[in-house]
Length: 143
Length: 326
Image 1: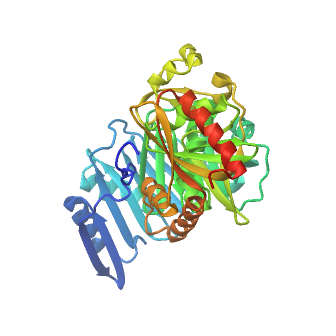
Image 2: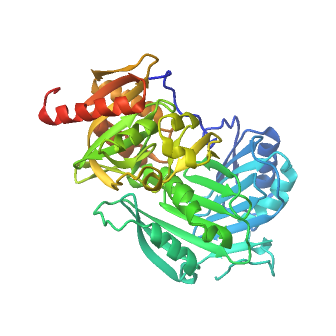
Image 3: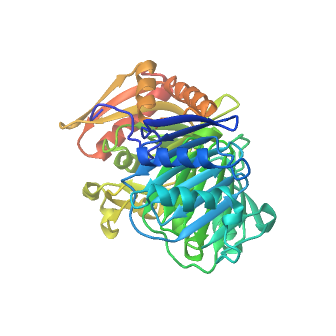
């Protein structure tokens, strides 16, 4: 071999460390939160604890990675739903996936999205269908 | 704000397609895209169990062409975007790909042939039993020769030189391995051959092509093997030998038998880690890698022009067939 073999680099950032971990029990449900950004982890925890029983999301596992290496640019939001998966793309650097069947919310957050915007504006677009615009500039819809 | 809701009943154009021996159930709202992908589907129908689905919505109002690729993954989800209008979500537990693309990308056959289909097989492969292995594959009389080696070891240049000695081309960089009825099968894809700039010293025909920036940012020739080299292409074969390539400074060729444990260790070191959410994929992949390492394995250290090494390999394979080296 021309050089010593090593594991290929984690180009997808699948194994990015998420050292800020919270486990909370709210209304008899255990919710697990992992993030690599303390501000994001705290914002998610706060929003989970403040939710009333009626408005509570069904997300039981959160993993959010602040992605400083993401490309910059774009401000358009694309929400994409297929069966149990809901995906939100903001520009080219932020992608959040909500797997409704597995009650998991996974995402990479671009550097310019603050935790407040994430929790109050972006995540609700995925977790509550009521937040979807009444007359969106729909590219294709049939439901 | 665009909201894309995919409903199976609203994607009327459906096809069963075949890529690298895997069946793909396509649903889309675009007749043009269905036609493009149908053209890329292989005609061979395999009895393998690998199957995945693709649901692709084409946004006819958007003309944005494919931008720079951006990949991310967590747990069972992998995403790929090529600009803000071309978004792909791979689900490795449900073996599916959902996508929203612009009309320009939908009609861009090179995008699907050279990028998206190989990417899809690379991402979903381990989950569906079609394991991507970082090696080239050539075939002679139906027998497959796998050539592994680190990036830059010369797999592609040697592969092209081998096609000029009568080997058929299957793949030059990534080979997709499946086990069908206990038999190992190596599949190629529609990806172009990627050759580094110095390959032009060995292959005059490359001088009529221009260098391009490939997906990993390297400057390289990315050419169709049939057009650029006139090589015969074989879609699949049964691998018989594994050769681990190493470039050396001095001219010459040295073959040495390699223990299967060493080959297995090498192959395992080249595959990407899979998340714990995919235990079945990890097991399936480990089984296929073990099967590959049980093939007769050799290391090949070579220096000098690839045509010289190709000649030596051709003789080596002929001797292997006669049992000379066994």
